[in-house]
Image 1 (cartoon, one colour):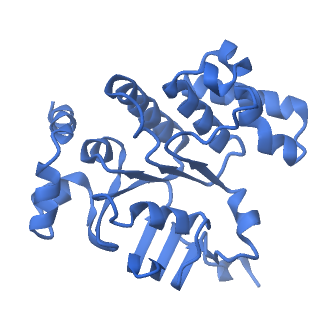
Image 2 (cartoon, rainbow, N blue to C red; image 1 turned 30 degrees about the horizontal axis):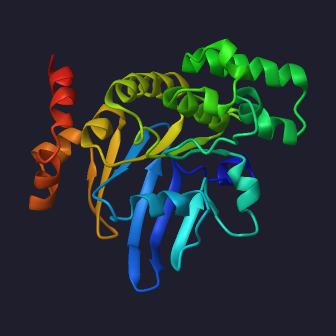
Length: 261
């Protein structure tokens, strides 16, 4: 087969007719969604709308009841998920750090497991420390000795250690106070810009979505209500729910002010 016969998808994920239920509760209903490469896609909506379930289906923590989830053109199955997950970085709200490991050990855990040479590990670690603006002396501390913001930066560095093709973040800043959260939003946006990676971010904050996202996917009741840029959601809403959701959050005003200054 010649090189021209291969089709390289322009999306990192593609969900086709994906549904997921927990008993009688339908978390995701026949969702069709493409996640473009090299951009930040934000899944947003009220609690229980299905955004976190959708993210977990992408990373293979959940299997769909119906439909398919493709990662770089490959259907995610129980047989291949461990291999595919090596190309995904994942960050959860509270970091999920191992409390008995130092920051350095948390970050480099998978690299050691995969047999990376020490020099390669140290080089990659320093790149990530510089990128995330993390203090070098913090690498020898345990999670309990780090602030909430520092813990999340460790979790981010761990997710980026293997240089994954996609970064998935499930409300990574949700548990932080506003000042720390604002600072990390700036760091995240700078990292996304520098790395040009495909990113999928879950948040409930429309201001954060507008600040970080290239594409916003607004969900309600397990369905996608509207997909587009923040300006498209504001100026061309798909219905009253979109307008009401946006207007209910004051955090968007700061983002709009920055965009138009």
